[in-house]
Image (cartoon, rainbow, N blue to C red; front, side):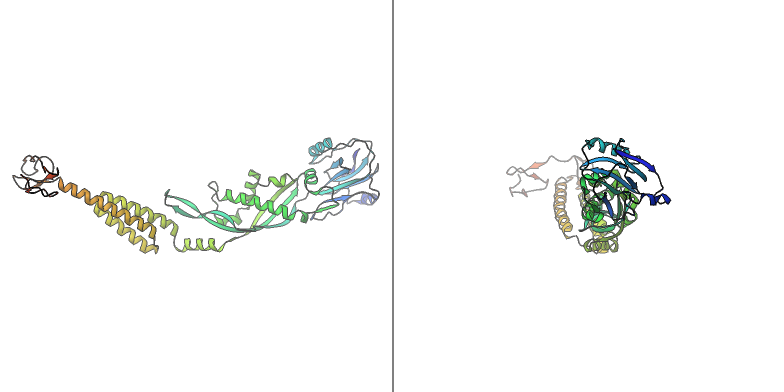
Length: 396
């Protein structure tokens, strides 16, 4: 059993009237994805005429078996003596596989029908994120004080837009979605397809805010082509494709920041990158502590500079200040101990009375006298000491 093409492109011509009794689906509405057509007695007899319109696919179905199919516009005659034409057209290979899997076993026909599929692009499908979606905004980078590098600001957004889709695999669509319903409209699928589109879009947002793209949040509505390209490259619409549906276009029409995210960006812009200043100030504190380790004056100068930065930015980083103050006190104690040790290492030349360090006097060249130690506690003694300053024992 198969179809024999009678004419092509003549559906709207004067030949139209002679096929008044033909099985056809004239003017399939845009919201109809699949519709069933048959004869009054439910049997497609030998010699019946079947008309396939533009943007349509016709599948002849018999009690769960595919008899034949066509994806090419034209007028066909159903011939029970011929082999399946397995349609010329864009779905030829697909229909051959269908027929091999669901071959007609020669039983007498009980109920036969032609299912027409709308393979045109289905337009004007709206979507919106039901809840705020997290996004990494590289338009407002902030300083990570731990790594001393910039990272994206975390914001939350709501997106609204439109998408278009089409039936790319009528067999999958029939077997996985529509079944053998008399009619299947896009509204029967709207909620499911919208949920999967939003899921795919959320994955796209993760890519756009990642290191490879770094798209600013307010630029998203202008990146329609890039969004679709990422969807295609990563097959984010794979769940739809498994149902015989493919996304054709995807447009973000509007984008709304949550109130918290809007406030965060406003503070960022008004404060001249307050977040970056915070990282800079934290780095300045660390530099000041480092200066303090090198010399006493460096710490004071560093702290004064940090104080001026705080005043200019109007920010108070109490946690950092507290940590810094503790570090400063610790460093001060170390400096005082170091100064004391240096002081103990100096000696007075008995010849010229000059304060000296080292083994010889820098003024007269006299050798440093051998150190004396307290016989009681072992503490080092100055040359002129009469008593040990550590334990009070008299020096003999």
